[in-house]
Length: 537
Image (tube, rainbow, N blue to C red; front, side):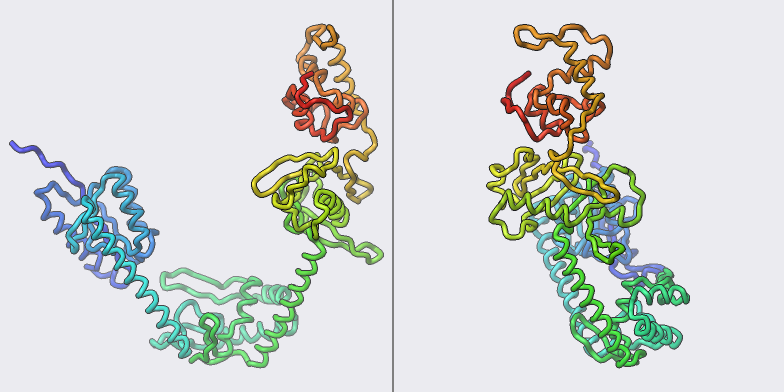
């Protein structure tokens, strides 16, 4: 008795590029499936059996893989439900050589074969794979040649003034008599002429938008061939700019950069259209020159960020005397959002921060032309400004850093330096001053904890040892203060600790034993009594 044949589950995939004829009782997809089922039936002796599931893509192009039927097919292959994929022709699966390579990779990974009915071969052998690649190359060539032919036809038709499809603009209806000529919609044409003349009266697209919305004048309402409702909404500013620039209203057709006389009738007078274009061009020049002036006057635009990572943009305000003041303001504050952190700096004097950054960069790189050119980014933090400089310009920076400035990070592209400053408030004005210029601010709670930590210690042969065991969790926590670097302890006693440093911060911070690491973790960029970085107290 012979061995039983292994069952080979066959999935039939069908595709048709257009939706034309799919509503027929027996369409192209049915014809493809019938041919594939007949082929599978002829291989019954080999154990082939067609699966009842349908993997059909009607109205989907073979130029990409964004097809529901194909996605379902690949998902079932990955789930191990399919042994062989059967198609009528190879280009039904895909017309792209790159997509085919990815699909075949999925087939091979899950031991699934591929068979074309009209091109009798499969992918189980090297010759079959070669033939598939050859056929796919021709299928892709055919698709690209077809695309070129269609593009050339569209260009030639537009050169003759024909409308080549799409949603017609406000004022026109699509051709209904088989021609390629737009039909004027009288009611919409009046609306278009009103928009053009109203813009000339108001002189601003923003004002025009508000005026049209107030008067209930909306965009073109359109129902697609699939019944989808589009338009009939208030105009956006972008839509109005496009409408006012549209040369279709002059009876012309545009193809790329070329202008042709169209077969349809114009609905806007040429003189009115030209006046609108001149006013729009004047506005563009004015806005562009204003933007250039803002860029020149605000060199930190796009480079300055607050402590929350929000970009700070330039803005101006005028005082009672009429004098103009420049600021950098966080994005959320410009939108009028309520501050989530009242201590976060969200508004800075542009003159002050530009002065601080410029002076620091010129000290680091004396030969640089524009100091802001080499600045990559500036981030505000509790410890000061974190200034990132391009690495190629920052070769000599480490040797020129001030005593209280430290390098935070080095990458292949940039070097980030901590520039210690503080943001002092005077009235409603935010000032930027060097961190070491503030008056001493002793923290009595922190000083008391430091003294208590030392009271629990005693000296044995010049070395600090614990005299009494801590009697509470609080004592055990603050005992670590006695092991801080001498310069850090002196700064706390003098009231020169960083503004963010208090007892609660210290209790939550893992304090390393190495003094150099303590200074880095706690935000000290100085050492009044220089000591070895490797010395352990």
